[in-house]
Amino acid sequence: MPPFCICIMENSPELGARLAEVFKLVRRGAAVIDVGSDHGYLPASLILRGVCGSCIVTDVNAAPLERARRTFAEYNVDTWRVDFRLADGLCGVELPLGNADICICGMGGELIALILEKRRFARGREVHFILQPMTREWALRRFLWDNGFETEAECAAEEKGKVYCVMSVYFTGRSVEYADGELFCGKRSARRASAAFTKYLDKTARSLEKKSEGIKKGGGDAAYFDKIIEWARRELSFETNRSEP
Image (cartoon, rainbow, N blue to C red; front, side, top):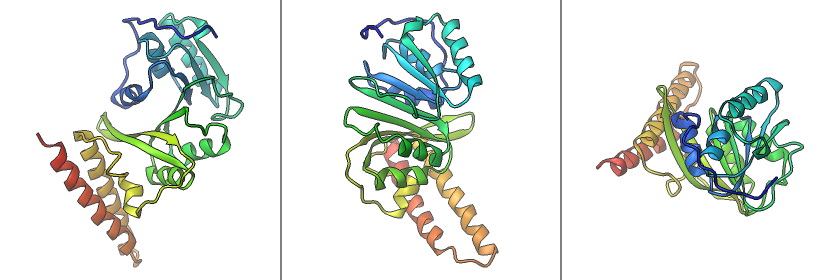
């Protein structure tokens, strides 16, 4: 592909709050790999708004790739800027030269972890991961911290009545110590304070409370979840105080 050049276009796809938060974390000038791109709104916006010069767009199915192609055609993105790949995650995808930002969004936390596990090539200090799990964030955090990935930042976005977390991650090769409560709430040092993150922690606490109630109704021991609920409520109080004017 030709060398990176900035070409800012006013007309670009409108991103929802979830992908807008991902957009903010992409490094200017990095080569972008968008895994499971679906409609291609994120990579198209990154190119049209001058954040990056080229993107690799991947999906495991042909239909989403075709939707992404139509998006790029609709917004008149130069074809040389985009490489469409029918691929399972990062399998068969080579890492671009220089800084690379790999976006894996809109899928379960365990699936994101599996994608990262399958392609160990993507483990270098020049690689930046932007991860947006839809479910089981705790499982993704555990995989990351057990396998040498560091969470530089965690943000949250509220969209259509739902709250999502977005993680900015780098590979360091060093495992990260963590408490069980941090698996569900993220590390306080990495969290970016916002009203959305306060809502995310509240959602987490409520979900854990339902889990605990279900276990107790079945006659089981919910002590572990009660401990995590206490942690989540403490973190919720901290974030509530921090986000207040």
